[in-house]
Image 1: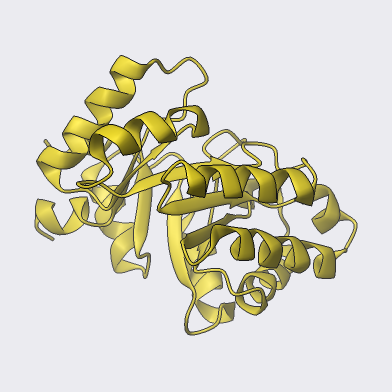
Image 2: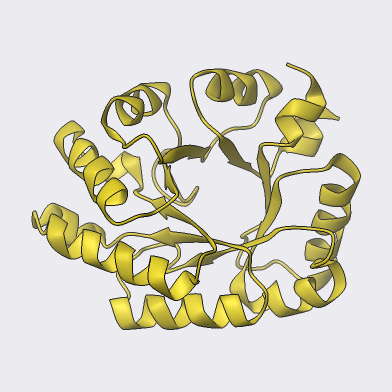
Length: 214
């Protein structure tokens, strides 16, 4: 694949808790230079990034991040504020406690509530595959599909491991036809990015694209 094709599918990401504005600014400048799909940044920087770059970049941010166990009311409020501040895309973390309890209807309801709060913006649902059984992953594919989300996303990048090819294959078998896949977590080389895209991912979440692709 051409580098430009890969960049066009990358959510250029910086979610470090210690990230300062100068780093976010540099990330956005790189995204403009290399024409990435979006920048994925902490919620606290969305308004400032929108004011400076919103007419030239898609701004993505995270909700319930990285652990996912905030309440649905908190997640919808975070989403509404992010949208008001100019976010184009939302990456939410599911409640893993509900998953482990088998409360998949609650998971689906929460995703649907966040999707409603997003007001037509793209919603990606982070399921954090490293903590899940195969059966849980399959059930979550149905939750994401039924709740109207746009993407299922493998990982936060803060878990015990990140994207795995076998999970992409499993997602492809069980998501609905309108749901896309985002691979994230531990994707650091051009070969990795290309492999995940060829396996069926529509987006790659990584902080390493510029270093890997040049």
